[in-house]
Every structure is written in C-alpha cells, then in structure tokens.
Length: 202
Image 1 (tube, rainbow, N blue to C red):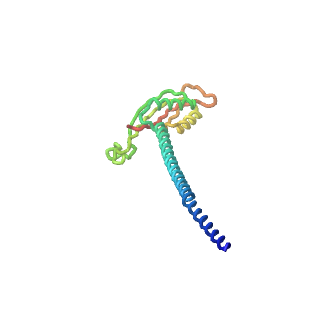
Image 2 (cartoon, rainbow, N blue to C red):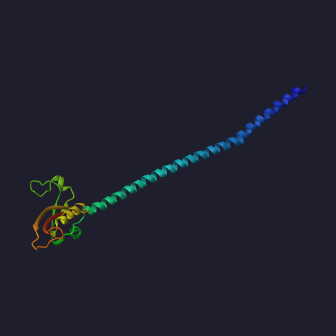
C-alpha cells in the first residue's frame, strides 16, 4: 500500500514538474527566444541596409571620380586646342621654345585662316554635309626668322613636337649666316620657318 502511494505521488510530482516546465517554456523561454530572433532579424536588416548605402556611396564616388577625370581631360584639351585664337599665347610659347633651344629670334609674323576639317565640296569652301555639323577649327600661321646652329634646330623641333599646344612645322628654309658670326663649335645659320597652330571656333 505504501509503495502504491509512493508511486502515485511520484507520478503526480513528475506531472507537476512537466506542467511547470511547459509553463516556464511557453511563458518565459519562448517569448525571449522570439525576441532574440526579432533582434537578429533587425540586425540583419540594418546590415543589409548599411551595405546597400555603402554600395550607393561607392557608385557616387566613382561617378565623381569619373567627372573629375573628365574635367582634367577637358583642361588638357583646352591647352592643346584652345577655345579661342590666343595669338599672344601662341607667340609666347613659340618664342619660349626658340629661346630654350638656343635660337636667336629675328622676327615673327602672324596670319589666321579657318577650315572645317571635311573634304572640300564642289564649290571648294569645305562646307559639305558632313563637315558643316562639325565644330570649325581655326588655324594660326606663324612665320619666323631665327638664327642658330644645327643643334639648336634639332632641339627646337624636339621641343615643338612635345609642346602641350599643337604646333605643326609646315616649311623650313636654311641659308648661310651673312654676318659671318660663328658659333662656339658649329657655324650659325639663318632659318625661315612656317609653323601652324590651331584653336576651336566658338
């Protein structure tokens, strides 16, 4: 009889513990677990949002860098092919190149012409259908008279080829130095040069 009672009490106690554990799980553990899951979901959502913002920032920065690069290219193009004649600048550059190469500049003269870059049409004015839509290019022709040695000439041509603004050497004539002055190592010659530079017509 006592053993039956003990077994009954043990069963009751086990049932009570089971009910208590279920109550504890559903009332305390499960809500906390759901809250932890919600917090993790919020964290993941915020991380995804942050990563998206970082990606957008990188794209914007890339666009900024691209536009800055284009600005630098435009600056270089403006120096190479100015938006105006800038005859004073062309003369100053050519004179500087001549003096840096050791030439003595005798004289400089200027003339300007325009062309459109297309093949001339039947009228010969160069304004065919393909060329008219292009932005016209202006030419500045510079005739120069200089004195110097052959080494001075080579140095001048090298500087002319590497100058930022485009200069094309169209013609060159060499004659003896009539004054009879001699260089330190080589004879001095008289040079007549025809140089052309370009600019964009507005």
